[in-house]
Image (tube, rainbow, N blue to C red; front, top):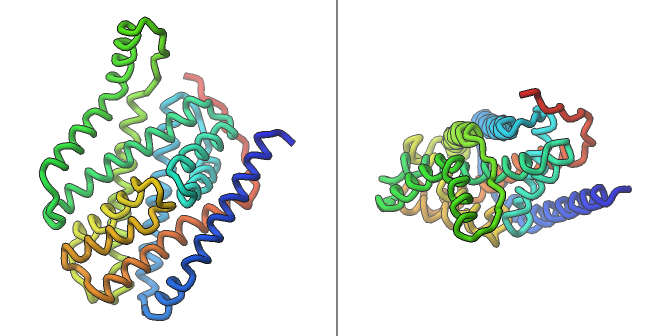
Length: 308
């Protein structure tokens, strides 16, 4: 058995172990939520479907970014890689998901540059567009300072110009240091596809969360679609950038409770219900597809690179 295959199996077992530990550690919380809530199941299923659509958008976005590097990946392979790698967010540290995506993509026949580069591009652009959508729809309700919005705009502009700025910066560094650092390849199309796809995915997340809130509270709470989109995105991003929190656990919940308190959209028991149930909702939708793909052996062969 090849060493890479042994490493892959060890990582798979580790991921399964972390997932099992995570569910077991929070089983009491899950049970109390299900006992106390009376959700409208039709709307709950609809909101879950929208989240899965957002996942499909992100998967296709990643495929397009891979394609911008001159590589090809079938949708079936991309879906398996994306869902399995997504389990890495439940392992402490934020690099596992990106590392797993790169490794699985290389195993599927994608070049290391395209595999790692596409993972990093989508992750970085996803952060920028997430903050951008959050500030657009929630700056007023969340009382976000204007300076924070300006910083995101500047970061977005820098990221959009990265295909031209990064090679120029490397060439300047070569002249100043006398070294010969390889100029990195970052296709402009990778940035554009990632920006469009991740923005659409964040909007779908917001619509899904709005429907989820109505389903869990039987329509008892009020707020605009923009309000609930911001309530979802802001805490999600806080959890993502909190490096020590697996899956954003703890950080996301504290941020959501604070956001609900600050906006007055939900208080007391209703706030606690939304915080706990939304964690369960997203965890189930992330873990189950990943576990299914992790346990099923891939059947399709990699798509060879197209002639360009």
